[in-house]
Image 1 (tube, chains in turn blue, orange):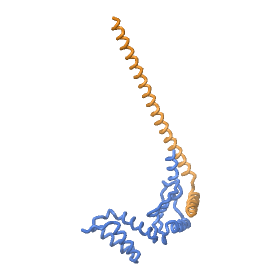
Image 2 (cartoon, rainbow over the protein chains, first blue to last red):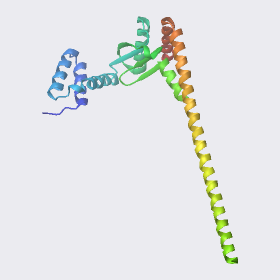
Image 3 (cartoon, rainbow over the protein chains, first blue to last red):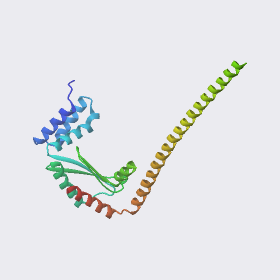
Image 4 (cartoon, chains in turn green, cyan):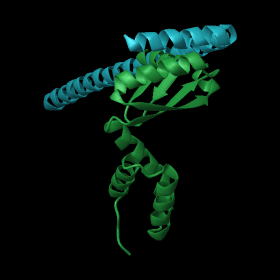
Amino acid sequence: MMHISRRRLADYAVKQLLEGQTAKQISKELAAVLIETKKTGDAELLAQDIAWQLEKRGKLASVEVTSATGIGETLRQEITSFIKEAVGVKQVNINEVTDESVIGGVRIETAALAWDRTIAKQLTDIKESF
Amino acid sequence: LADARTQAKEVIAAAEKSGEASATRIVAEAEDHLSQERAKLRSELREELASLVVETTEKVIRKKLSTKEDLELINNTVKELQK
Protein backbone atom coordinates (compact mmCIF):
# COMPACT_ATOMS: atom_id res chain seq x y z
CA MET A 1 0.00 0.00 0.00
CA MET A 2 1.43 3.39 -1.01
CA HIS A 3 1.95 5.96 1.72
CA ILE A 4 0.65 9.46 0.96
CA SER A 5 1.37 12.15 3.51
CA ARG A 6 -1.46 14.32 4.84
CA ARG A 7 0.31 17.39 3.52
CA ARG A 8 0.45 15.98 0.00
CA LEU A 9 -3.20 15.10 0.18
CA ALA A 10 -4.04 18.62 1.34
CA ASP A 11 -1.90 20.08 -1.50
CA TYR A 12 -3.73 17.91 -3.99
CA ALA A 13 -7.16 18.87 -2.63
CA VAL A 14 -6.38 22.60 -2.69
CA LYS A 15 -5.00 22.35 -6.24
CA GLN A 16 -8.12 20.54 -7.41
CA LEU A 17 -10.38 23.07 -5.67
CA LEU A 18 -8.54 25.96 -7.31
CA GLU A 19 -8.87 24.26 -10.68
CA GLY A 20 -12.62 24.28 -10.26
CA GLN A 21 -13.44 20.80 -9.01
CA THR A 22 -16.33 20.75 -6.57
CA ALA A 23 -15.77 20.20 -2.84
CA LYS A 24 -18.09 17.19 -3.02
CA GLN A 25 -15.99 15.49 -5.70
CA ILE A 26 -12.76 16.13 -3.81
CA SER A 27 -14.26 14.95 -0.53
CA LYS A 28 -15.21 11.66 -2.17
CA GLU A 29 -11.68 11.19 -3.50
CA LEU A 30 -10.09 12.06 -0.17
CA ALA A 31 -12.45 9.76 1.71
CA ALA A 32 -11.50 6.91 -0.64
CA VAL A 33 -7.79 7.52 -0.04
CA LEU A 34 -8.24 7.73 3.73
CA ILE A 35 -10.21 4.47 3.77
CA GLU A 36 -7.68 2.75 1.50
CA THR A 37 -4.73 3.85 3.62
CA LYS A 38 -6.64 3.10 6.87
CA LYS A 39 -6.27 6.69 8.04
CA THR A 40 -9.87 7.75 8.46
CA GLY A 41 -8.90 9.14 11.88
CA ASP A 42 -6.88 11.83 10.05
CA ALA A 43 -9.97 13.30 8.34
CA GLU A 44 -10.32 16.22 10.76
CA LEU A 45 -6.60 17.06 10.59
CA LEU A 46 -6.70 16.85 6.81
CA ALA A 47 -9.62 19.28 6.73
CA GLN A 48 -7.61 21.66 8.96
CA ASP A 49 -4.58 21.36 6.64
CA ILE A 50 -6.75 22.20 3.62
CA ALA A 51 -8.28 25.18 5.45
CA TRP A 52 -4.81 26.38 6.45
CA GLN A 53 -3.51 26.15 2.87
CA LEU A 54 -6.53 27.93 1.41
CA GLU A 55 -6.04 30.71 3.97
CA LYS A 56 -2.30 30.91 3.31
CA ARG A 57 -2.94 31.25 -0.42
CA GLY A 58 -5.39 34.09 0.21
CA LYS A 59 -8.34 32.21 -1.20
CA LEU A 60 -10.63 31.34 1.68
CA ALA A 61 -10.66 31.69 5.46
CA SER A 62 -12.79 29.27 7.43
CA VAL A 63 -13.62 31.17 10.57
CA GLU A 64 -15.11 29.96 13.83
CA VAL A 65 -16.84 32.75 15.75
CA THR A 66 -17.68 31.85 19.34
CA SER A 67 -19.94 33.96 21.57
CA ALA A 68 -22.28 33.41 24.50
CA THR A 69 -25.44 34.59 22.82
CA GLY A 70 -24.77 34.47 19.09
CA ILE A 71 -24.05 37.26 16.61
CA GLY A 72 -26.49 38.93 14.25
CA GLU A 73 -26.18 39.45 10.52
CA THR A 74 -24.61 42.91 10.89
CA LEU A 75 -21.83 41.60 13.12
CA ARG A 76 -21.34 38.66 10.80
CA GLN A 77 -20.68 41.10 7.97
CA GLU A 78 -18.38 43.23 10.14
CA ILE A 79 -16.37 40.15 11.11
CA THR A 80 -16.23 39.04 7.48
CA SER A 81 -14.75 42.35 6.35
CA PHE A 82 -12.32 42.35 9.30
CA ILE A 83 -11.09 38.85 8.38
CA LYS A 84 -10.73 39.75 4.69
CA GLU A 85 -8.53 42.68 5.69
CA ALA A 86 -6.57 41.03 8.53
CA VAL A 87 -5.94 37.67 6.88
CA GLY A 88 -5.80 38.86 3.29
CA VAL A 89 -8.32 36.47 1.80
CA LYS A 90 -10.93 36.91 -0.91
CA GLN A 91 -13.61 34.76 0.68
CA VAL A 92 -14.68 34.16 4.27
CA ASN A 93 -16.74 31.28 5.55
CA ILE A 94 -18.09 31.86 9.08
CA ASN A 95 -19.11 29.04 11.36
CA GLU A 96 -20.96 30.45 14.36
CA VAL A 97 -20.67 28.69 17.72
CA THR A 98 -22.74 29.57 20.78
CA ASP A 99 -20.97 28.72 24.01
CA GLU A 100 -22.18 30.17 27.33
CA SER A 101 -18.88 29.41 29.03
CA VAL A 102 -17.27 32.38 27.25
CA ILE A 103 -19.63 34.62 29.36
CA GLY A 104 -19.52 37.52 26.90
CA GLY A 105 -17.47 39.02 24.08
CA VAL A 106 -16.19 37.08 21.12
CA ARG A 107 -13.50 34.64 20.03
CA ILE A 108 -12.57 34.62 16.35
CA GLU A 109 -10.43 31.76 15.03
CA THR A 110 -9.18 31.01 11.54
CA ALA A 111 -6.99 28.06 10.53
CA ALA A 112 -3.87 30.08 11.31
CA LEU A 113 -4.91 33.00 13.55
CA ALA A 114 -7.03 33.67 16.63
CA TRP A 115 -8.40 36.68 18.51
CA ASP A 116 -9.82 35.84 21.90
CA ARG A 117 -11.73 38.83 23.29
CA THR A 118 -14.10 36.88 25.51
CA ILE A 119 -14.82 37.81 29.12
CA ALA A 120 -13.82 34.28 30.16
CA LYS A 121 -10.36 34.82 28.66
CA GLN A 122 -9.99 38.20 30.38
CA LEU A 123 -10.95 36.68 33.73
CA THR A 124 -8.45 33.87 33.23
CA ASP A 125 -5.75 36.44 32.45
CA ILE A 126 -6.62 38.37 35.62
CA LYS A 127 -6.49 35.17 37.70
CA GLU A 128 -3.11 34.24 36.24
CA SER A 129 -1.68 37.71 36.88
CA PHE A 130 -2.23 37.42 40.66
CA LEU B 1 43.00 13.72 90.18
CA ALA B 2 43.94 17.14 88.76
CA ASP B 3 44.32 15.59 85.30
CA ALA B 4 40.97 13.93 85.65
CA ARG B 5 39.39 17.27 86.59
CA THR B 6 41.01 19.01 83.63
CA GLN B 7 39.84 16.27 81.31
CA ALA B 8 36.35 16.43 82.74
CA LYS B 9 36.29 20.23 82.23
CA GLU B 10 37.44 19.78 78.65
CA VAL B 11 34.78 17.17 77.99
CA ILE B 12 32.11 19.47 79.49
CA ALA B 13 33.33 22.46 77.46
CA ALA B 14 33.33 20.42 74.25
CA ALA B 15 29.84 19.13 75.02
CA GLU B 16 28.58 22.66 75.71
CA LYS B 17 30.13 23.91 72.47
CA SER B 18 28.61 21.06 70.51
CA GLY B 19 25.26 21.62 72.22
CA GLU B 20 25.32 25.31 71.33
CA ALA B 21 26.14 24.51 67.72
CA SER B 22 23.28 21.98 67.57
CA ALA B 23 20.87 24.47 69.11
CA THR B 24 21.93 27.15 66.65
CA ARG B 25 21.45 24.73 63.76
CA ILE B 26 18.04 23.61 65.04
CA VAL B 27 16.88 27.23 65.42
CA ALA B 28 18.15 28.10 61.92
CA GLU B 29 16.38 25.10 60.42
CA ALA B 30 13.17 25.95 62.26
CA GLU B 31 13.35 29.56 61.03
CA ASP B 32 13.97 28.39 57.50
CA HIS B 33 11.03 25.97 57.69
CA LEU B 34 8.78 28.69 59.11
CA SER B 35 9.83 31.09 56.38
CA GLN B 36 9.00 28.50 53.70
CA GLU B 37 5.63 27.79 55.31
CA ARG B 38 4.84 31.52 55.45
CA ALA B 39 5.68 31.91 51.74
CA LYS B 40 3.56 28.86 50.85
CA LEU B 41 0.62 30.17 52.87
CA ARG B 42 0.93 33.62 51.32
CA SER B 43 0.93 32.08 47.84
CA GLU B 44 -2.09 29.87 48.63
CA LEU B 45 -3.96 32.85 50.05
CA ARG B 46 -3.18 34.92 46.96
CA GLU B 47 -4.45 32.13 44.70
CA GLU B 48 -7.62 31.69 46.76
CA LEU B 49 -8.24 35.42 46.73
CA ALA B 50 -7.74 35.55 42.95
CA SER B 51 -10.19 32.66 42.47
CA LEU B 52 -12.73 34.33 44.72
CA VAL B 53 -12.45 37.67 42.91
CA VAL B 54 -12.74 36.02 39.50
CA GLU B 55 -15.66 33.78 40.52
CA THR B 56 -17.56 36.72 42.02
CA THR B 57 -16.87 38.91 38.98
CA GLU B 58 -18.04 36.11 36.69
CA LYS B 59 -21.29 35.70 38.65
CA VAL B 60 -21.98 39.44 38.59
CA ILE B 61 -21.26 39.72 34.87
CA ARG B 62 -23.41 36.69 34.03
CA LYS B 63 -26.26 38.24 36.01
CA LYS B 64 -25.88 41.78 34.66
CA LEU B 65 -24.76 41.33 31.04
CA SER B 66 -27.78 41.35 28.75
CA THR B 67 -27.81 40.00 25.20
CA LYS B 68 -28.01 43.56 23.90
CA GLU B 69 -24.98 44.63 25.94
CA ASP B 70 -23.06 41.55 24.84
CA LEU B 71 -23.76 42.40 21.19
CA GLU B 72 -22.56 45.95 21.83
CA LEU B 73 -19.43 44.56 23.44
CA ILE B 74 -18.78 42.31 20.44
CA ASN B 75 -19.46 45.18 18.06
CA ASN B 76 -16.97 47.41 19.89
CA THR B 77 -14.43 44.60 19.93
CA VAL B 78 -14.70 44.07 16.18
CA LYS B 79 -14.39 47.85 15.61
CA GLU B 80 -11.26 47.89 17.79
CA LEU B 81 -9.82 44.96 15.86
CA GLN B 82 -10.49 46.78 12.58
CA LYS B 83 -8.38 49.79 13.66
